[in-house]
Image (cartoon, rainbow, N blue to C red; front, top):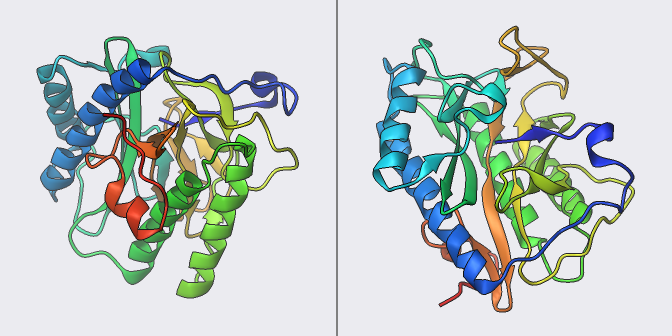
Length: 288
């Protein structure tokens, strides 16, 4: 789940913190991450034309609770669902309900789970049935931008610097596809641990400060949101669902990642991120 970090929330650049976790705590977060990753993998195979977003939500809640975990989102500041399900022009925080998923839809599914007090948070965008080439390029560009941010999560860097990595990836994908992708204004990733949303802010665009230093044991949720149109959005009357002002379609990808003494460990990826990290020449660093 994304959070809108307003200036009153984040304070002055550089005053945020990026706490570290012990190896035992990272292993606990990995258990939560595996529940989230497994749930999203099941949902990827289940989502189909004719299904309501409420049905998808029920499948997710059964999966999470069936593994002894608790949905992170349900009841969070009053949010009523286990998932955020955002369709087409909906960017994030879509409330599951009676909306029927149709062939050609882009469906962003955001999922969180708590195991033994530790959180995992991840999102995917699924193309349902036959979708256009632009929609496929949008989702691919957003996913690639997430991995660019993950790859930049290195010891000694400032965590705000990930925004430049993500922005550069989105711009490069746009040039390659011949499309003008835009990064959603105001929404960011976040720190994560025994709370779902913690310091620091993880920007999706380049900013003027480096932010707190990344150290071994740090964990963040990296989650770019990208559109085929403008970057401006607004909330619907439900006070949750965020939609693009111009009705353009959006995509949302997210993983929770840890930096270990061995390298990167993507806690919400079923393989820990091994395939994607190895393909990019990045260090895969799971704990035994």
